[in-house]
Length: 136
Ligand SMILES: [Zn+2]
Image (tube, rainbow, N blue to C red):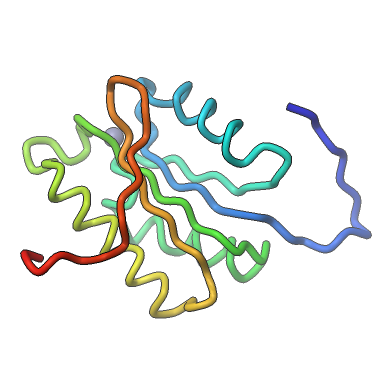
């Protein structure tokens, strides 16, 4: 990964904001995935227990990234066995929370691309479709 210095003459334009849980078990996986998927692009990064679960904390960070850094993409990553969710953290709950977060972002920032992922302990990320199934 190459580091490119910045200077004040360049516009503040960032490709994406990435929101994950702070769980230590997943950080190397996230680093690897971000290197593979966002290398040579800039991204803001937020790590907070539960990922999108604490929406009142997370959303202002996304708003800052959208308004100040002009990000175009939002990447939301929740994960398996998240202790911030505890017993409530079923796969369906994570999918529902991720989709709800996406809907809330698009309500205010319809121009953004919002991507959803679910990280597995085994070491990979699953893409979550934005479509809401009738059961929700
Ligand atoms: Zn977690």
